[in-house]
Image (tube, rainbow, N blue to C red; front, top):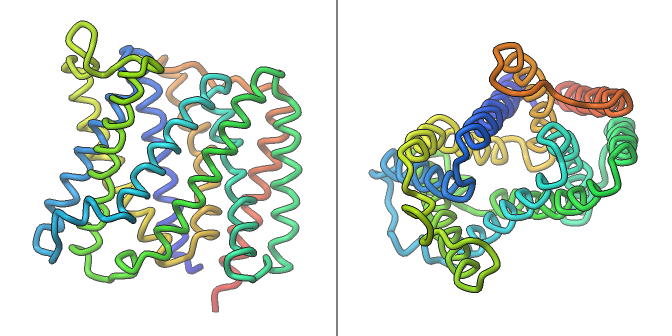
Length: 309
């Protein structure tokens, strides 16, 4: 992995860290509906990407292609599992524990490609395992439910990354075609989300998006922040993520994302000084575990830099 690709991956991690901070501040403080917020930003980002790729050949029927629909519903499942996880886990805890995707990615890569991790990767993977185990053991018993949901979410996220990596359209070099591909996926994900949400609402499992005072989409603040988030974060973040997977592979993409929780902690600390959010609340054991995870992340990134010819 060259320096430019590392910068691309780390830049994407920083972008998603800013997104998490904005979402935490806006959704929590303004009391916005999280489902509606996600849906509007997905649709906004998708339509922008489709507009940017408007000159690329394609058809609206691609939105209903089996692969696209399968990926879209998988993204809905990932969002649902993540939402369930944060019921029991704090935001900082969930972002740190999400680095388990590196271990899942290493195992899946070994299984799918029949290539075991390099001998230089093993110390970093061992450090990551130790840090995650220490962090998990420091959790209060109820938070283990959140951890289970998070592992499920990250397992599906790794599967989604492999789906993207192996799709022929993610190997295209034309920027317009790549934008159209990204846009189709985002729009399909938004349609899958409203369909699943509506069905769950009808069955009474969750509150329906179409009931209540003005329904879930009736607030102007929601549209403003969700559209802004879609334009600034969801659209470029998804495009960069797909591009990074194409250029570096799934496992290197996941390793670059391990920087995200540490960007998020730094950004939260700065935002806390401004009174926007509460400071990261970790115990001493969790801080030590987080430092171990950071050391593992740095090790794995350096290994990939040094492996570049």
